[in-house]
Image 1: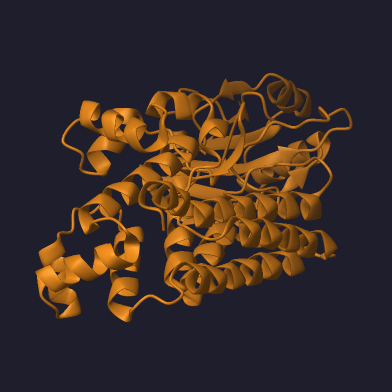
Image 2: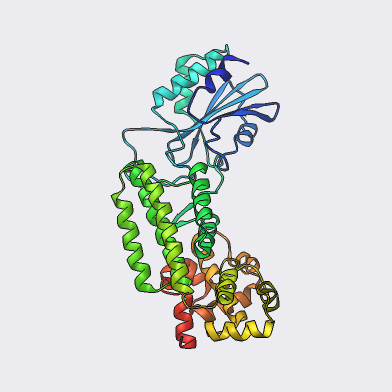
Amino acid sequence: MNLLRQYLRTTSFAYSIIRNGQTIEKDRDNLLAGTFNAKKFALTSRQRRLVTFYKLKGQNIITAIIRHHNYYYVIGPVIISTNDQDKTPQPFLVSSAHLKHFSADRFIMVIALCINLLGAYINSKKLQLRYRRPVYTNTSFKKSSFIRLNNNGAHVNYAFEKQINNAILCGDQAEIHTALTRLYQSGRIGILSNKGELRNIIDFGIIVISTNIRVALRSGINFELAYSLNDYYVHRLEEQKSFHAVIKCIEDNLTNLSKEVKHDITAGMPPTIVRAYRLVSTNPQEDITVTEVAKQLNISPNYFSSQFKKWMGISFTQFRILEKINCAITLLVSSNMNVSEIAALLHFNDQAYFANQFKKHTGFSPNQVRNNPILISDWNIYNYLKAKCRL
């Protein structure tokens, strides 16, 4: 084992070592799992010199690649701290808690040390010049962040949102914990504030809570209860004094919300209707039939259909379409899927039929909602049923 590999194993920043086209080692914490493909990044590099610096366009994020014989040593990415950073930093895909911060001089010194440990040499002025003239890139990170920002505000990515939504609707506290743990470990939380790590995670928590409050509203929770819970949860987040305290508070808030949703939406319903409600609300993309649900509940299809309409005010098939519309709203607001992809995912016959059903139930077209999510902010299944079925 060479001296550089020994040194890298003692460091706290992300690194990868590629030999003959294969990754043979990376930082033990796998800090950038799922967001950065170091092997692909190194092998697509066109540079043949000893060291090359790569800078992510629009960000103070630098990666260095040291090429020595048949090895590529990928050092970073790291955040380069400056005294004149823009006071409104642009979001990027990895949390500052998962990227090492360096001054420019210190990072150059680290790279010089790495080169020396290989037994190679580069003039210090040449090394500094290469740092000041990096290769600009926009391909170093996968587009897998859990925060999506656009002109209409910030939204939690659908992959994470769906997992949390299902857990809340099912009252699955273990799944809430699992989803949040995976998120924190992945490092995929965007920068939402320039006031430090604590403020950043509090802002993230507020977004997560607000997003799930909206989903709870669309699923039928009482408006007054929802907004009072939102105020209470945000107040609790603002009171926290440490990063880990905020993380625990986010989980506690979501767990409490799941209990409130379970109690408020299905209060008084027979167990069979509650099970059917949750089966559809947590799997809106499935085309489950009355017969299939009745079989799972061990009752006849006719009896199930009559009981469902008695308690819900609409047929099971109509309710299933409403849940698909509810899911489509989430996808339009918090994902980059186009309308045809959403229609296909939710098993509508075609895009035109999906658009027709969407407008029928919401009053707006899918494109109108995507361009202006505020139009749909007050829509929820409970209010729809109340207006149409006089619940």
